[in-house]
Amino acid sequence: MSRSVKVAAAQLGPIGRSKSREAVVRRLIELMREAADWGVDVIVYPELALTTFFPRWAIEDEEEIDSWFEAEMPNAATQPLFEEAKRLGIGFHLGYAELAWQDGVKHRFNTAIIVDKAGGIVGKFRKIHIPGHNEVLDRPGQHLEKKYFEVGDLGFPVYQAFGATCGMAICNDRRWPETWRVMGLQGVEMVFCGYNTPVGLGDPYDLDALTLFHNQLSFQAGCYQNATWAVGVAKAGCEEGFNMIGQSMIVAPSGEVVAMCNTIEDELIVHKCDLGRSAEYKRDIFNFAYHRRPEHYGLIVERTGAGSPEK
Ligand code: CDT
Image (cartoon, rainbow, N blue to C red; front, side, top):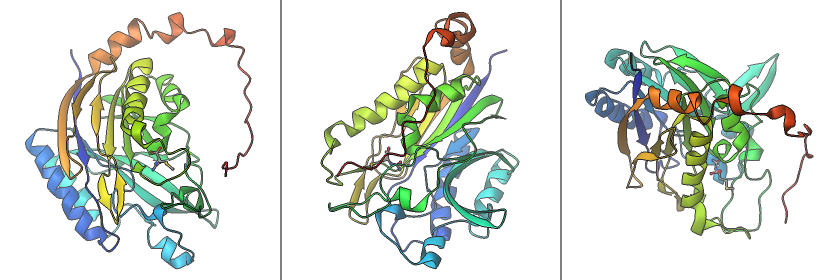
């Protein structure tokens, strides 16, 4: 019997700094209803989908920093999204800034969850590859994720949802082969990945001209080499004077892009993903058990150092 998952990538246009969670959730619900009309199983929202991309600013006040984070999920502002999902019988993936207390210690993570069609959280991921800096640089734009987020402590788990083996990555994670391979080794069939990718920050290695190419390359390579579908979803457009790419896309296990947004606004794209395509690649060219030879890689497993930005 063939298995498939109908997915929607729900790209978001800019969210202003003053916008309330409630206002954003109304936008998310509108996209969710559109997806339900298409008969979608799961709708995928971007990284940090509930607010503006606040890591572009250096905020010092602890209380103000905390105000960008969610201490509970669901909470009063997001409860309507969970209820609407349940009412419509649609699952969703949501990225948000998470404030977590563990053993009496406060932690801040860049987090994403998978919610099933009954409105229950069935999976959580905390971003591992935290890009940018923890101090303000002398350039037009900042990307201060290292100031606000700890490295995720959950690894790259996979979850059973919507009849598929699903995994998550958040933005910068998509550029790292390890992200895909760790999930690939667990048999992932569908990866959800939201992103906020700025252009024009003005650092010396400004690769703006290649940003769209690298976005697409990362998804296509990750999917092909690990025989998985992926749904990549942007927060796009000019947000508080800073530009972010769109190009949200759905990518097949063949590495082919099967759907892509063509605006930098709120936009929905839909595709019925045949999980049989994933199985074909897993059986053949990327049959890991049959062809992969890790014992011959001469792999040295060590960390290369804490690293610091080149100035
Ligand atoms: N949000 C996020 O991870 N963005 C990064 C941009 C880093 S540029 C300093 C990305 O990889 O798209």
